[in-house]
Image 1: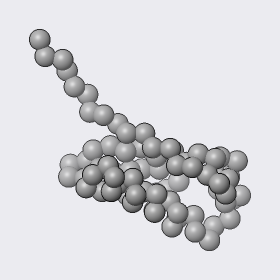
Image 2: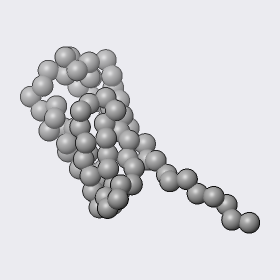
Image 3: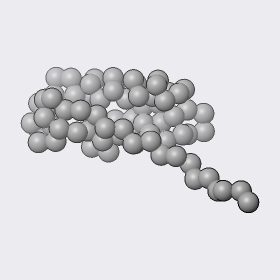
Length: 76
């Protein structure tokens, strides 16, 4: 069973966007703190009342967030 639910966060046009890799869950926020809280809440709401065995998720799962940085170039 999975103990880790993976989430990818990236900067959208106006908001930060968080997408779960393991679940069909997406959320957004104005800053990193807000998007982190929002995706955590969205995952918990998505799994509420679900049989975690059907999702192959451990009841004591954790959420691992990866943040994508925009590429930058060094200036000469």
